[in-house]
Image 1 (cartoon, helix red, strand yellow):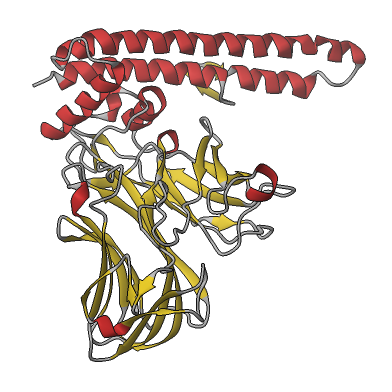
Image 2: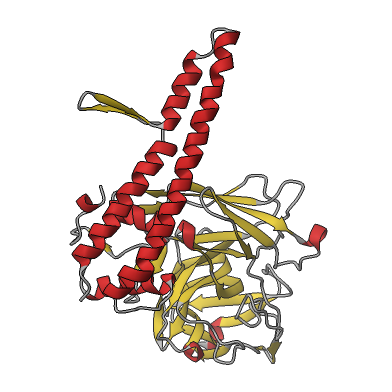
Length: 436
C-alpha cells in the first residue's frame, strides 16, 4: 500500500506554497498578526492608487504601481517554476510510491485515484452544483442544450465532478448554415468557461431514413421510412397497434411517431444499435433526447430510455399527465455507458404503459456522445431544433453558472494544480490541515 501520510505531507506543502504565491500575486489581502500587517501586491497597488491622486507630482509616482505589477508577474513566474517542481516530484517520488515508474503524469494521477479508492482513502469534498441553462432571449434557433456535473470514479460509480469552479460558462454559436455553409443540424458552438480554454461542440442532428450520421447513432430519428404501415428502422416488440406514423403533427421531415393508447395496451418499440460503424464508444457519457408533443394524456405514461446489456438505463425521459399539452417540447439528458458494457448490446427503447390513455407524438429521437469540458467539470450536449441557430449578426447563446463551496483544501489544490478530483467523502481519512 502506498504511504499516504508521506504523499499528502508533500502535496500539502506544495498546496501551501501555491496558496502563498497566489495570495501574494493575485488576491487583494490585508491582515494583521503578531504585531505585523501583511498586504498582498494587489492590495499595495490599490493603496498607492488611492493616495497618489491629489497633484501632478503625486501622480508621477504612479510608477510604483507599475513596479508592484511587475512584482506580481514575477510571483506568477515563481508559480510556474513551482509547478515544474511538483511535476518532477510526481514523475519521481510519487511514481515510486505507486510502483509505477516510467508512467506518464496523467497515468500516475489516475493510479493515485485508483489506489486511494481501493484503500478507502479520501480527502474533504467540495460541494458543487450547476444552475439552470439559460437561452438568450435573442436566440433565433430553438436548439436544446443540456449539461451534467456527473462523472465516474475509478470504480465506475457516478459522482459529482469536483473540478467544477465558481464561474459562468457561455455556449455560443460560431458557425452556421447561411454564413459558413455548415449543414443544418451540424452547427458549431464554442463552450467558453471563464477559467480555462474554450471547447468546440456541434449540434446533434436529426437523421432521416437510412442515411446515418456520426453525430447521431439513431437511424431515422425523424420516422421517415415505413413499408406497409410498418416503420423500416424500428422493431415492434409488443403492442404494435399503439404505434403509427403520423404526417400531420410533425416537427422534422414528413412525419412523426404517434403513440395512441387506449388504457389497456402496453407497447414497446426498439432500435438495436449493434450494427453501428464505428461501434458505440463505452466508458463515456452519451446524450439522449427527443421532441415530444402531447395531444392528450389522461392516464399512464410514455417513456424513452436505453437498454444496456438488457438493463434499463438510469436516464428515462417520461411523458405523462404533468407534461404540457399542445406544444412541441424537448426532453433530454446524459447517460453514462459503462466501460464494461457491450456496444453491440445497446438499444433505444420507446414504450407506453398498459394504462396509457391518450395521444403522444415523438420526433427527432437522438443519441450522441456528449462533449467533455474536463477543466470545467462538466459534460454538455446541444440537440437540433426545428429552427436552426445562427452565428451572426447576434449569435445564439446559452449561459450556465457553476458553483463550488471550495471546502476541501486538498481538493481545490488537486483541481488547480493536478487537473483532477481526488476521491472524497464527508469523513475524509486525510486531513486538510496538511494543506492549510
